[in-house]
Amino acid sequence: MNRETQLIANSMLSVRDQFPAIASWHYLDSAATAQKPQSVIDAITTAYARDYATVHRGVYERSVVMTDAYEDSRAAASKLIGGQANELIFTRGATEAINLVARTLPKKGRNRVLLSQLEHHSNIVPWQLAGYEIDAVPLTADGQIDLDAAERMLTEEHRVVAFAHVSNVLGSILDAKRAADIAHSKGALLLLDGCQAVPRLPVDVAAIGADFYAFSAHKLYGPTGIGCLWGRAELLESLPPWQGGGAMIDQVTFARTTFAEPPARFEAGTPHIVGAVGLHAAVNWVENLSLDAIHAHECALVAETRAALSSIPGVTLYGPEDSAGIVSFNVDGVHAHDTATILDDAGVAVRAGHHCAQPLMEWLGVPATARASFAAHSDSSDIEALVKGIEQVKRIFE
Ligand SMILES: Cc1ncc(COP(=O)(O)O)c(C=O)c1O
Image 1 (cartoon, rainbow, N blue to C red):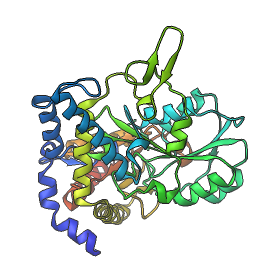
Image 2 (cartoon, rainbow, N blue to C red):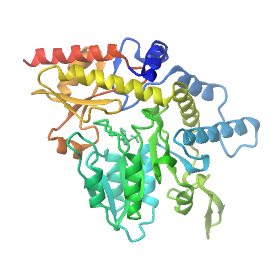
Image 3 (cartoon, helix red, strand yellow):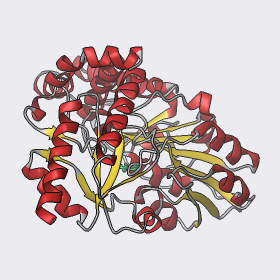
Image 4 (cartoon, rainbow, N blue to C red):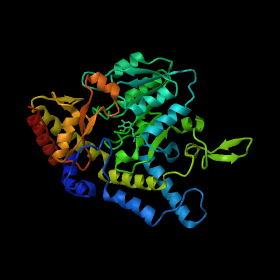
């Protein structure tokens, strides 16, 4: 155990205790959605119960205070990934963030997008709906996006390279800086789907050289219904609006409407005010623990899980050894749904299915996997329960 892992392990007891919804439950489905620490729940409750008012429109004091809270959240969420406040647009989630880019980015005569075999449907379907031709980069044998292949496949017809920073099924971590260099070598833009990365590792969009970065608050210990699109300021400046309504305009007449500067240009209508407050509390919470420490902790849990599961005959593990907080597996001859159902009886929650990544299932040659995914509150007791549950699966199906 390195020092960071040790530090977070020492503080684990109190971390776990901060999550009221997981008492006596082995929650291993944080990649689907994270449980909420008490500080986030309290921030949301207080925002509704004491501080609630609209934003950007009111002249009364409470609305001004709420507007400040909303904008402070924007600055904090952007800073978390190394960006500036004016570069972050609030969306409903990562899905909407990727749709926003796919729908508004001028194609400039380039009609192709380079994706990878492991993308979530949220990073496939928006490009199809926006009329792009898709090329999919294959994976290495251990489930990483093959960047050598990406380099060979990229052409000047590609407008965007859009990759998951961390795979939601395999936990594979992208060499994002190299992906940016490859994209830019042919004049393409790099969009990173950071849904699984932001809760699990430190992210710095400036150091990476990314052009767009998408993530969801609910996977970062925050509320559902709010997420973020970070984009380089001059790129956001160049994009047209995509949804019309209040808050995104400068002047409206029946003849002509002019639009607000980003980020307001992309936030039509009353936003998820309390969601932003909850997201800010979540950002504070992870920063307080430190994403370096969370990452080290989850890597240690992955190593422990892979060692334990690989010693059980008939268990197949997918993905690289050094995945970020996520382990996918199957028990030979057992459908992943049956595995997950038996684990549920044992008080262990895992996800089973295609994980919104059907092209990846095709690549793996299976209809589904079971997936254990960790969070800052996870510990060895979760892994012990998982192993016992899998032994039970094997007994039932023997
Ligand atoms: C890698 C990845 N991308 C995109 C998404 C979509 O996120 P949301 O449903 O919060 O918009 C998810 C959610 O599972 C994900 O794991």
